[in-house]
Length: 128
Ligand SMILES: [Zn+2]
Image 1: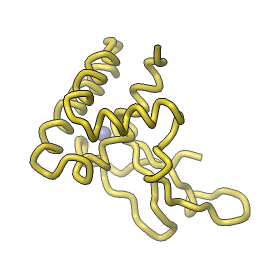
Image 2: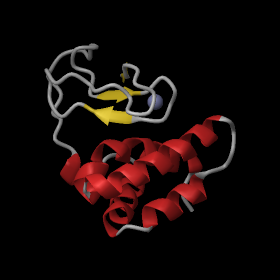
Image 3: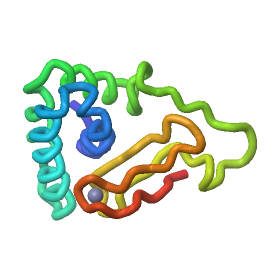
Image 4: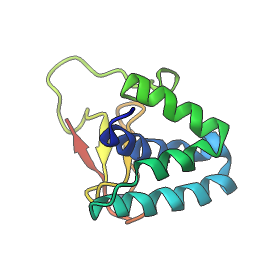
């Protein structure tokens, strides 16, 4: 069994990759449902099984989530960030999250600005 917290983390983390995994048309529908489930999670509802069911409907997302839950992080082939030497700073932060807790974005390399949360249209916060 997977930890529900890991499943939520996976659901937030997969959202930036949905276009790539599913194509824009499918991605939009799945992303909308994921955002809805994550909003329900914020109200204390247990949604981890619904998230797994939703992502299992497509081969690409099922495989991504399985790899994520095994590694507890982004699947290896999607991880391209290499941190700069020296202490971490906001400038070099690799991970960004929506303050409302429904979106996680990894900076592929230094210098790329994080996008706003697609659900809330607010800036993402860096996480150290
Ligand atoms: Zn958000």
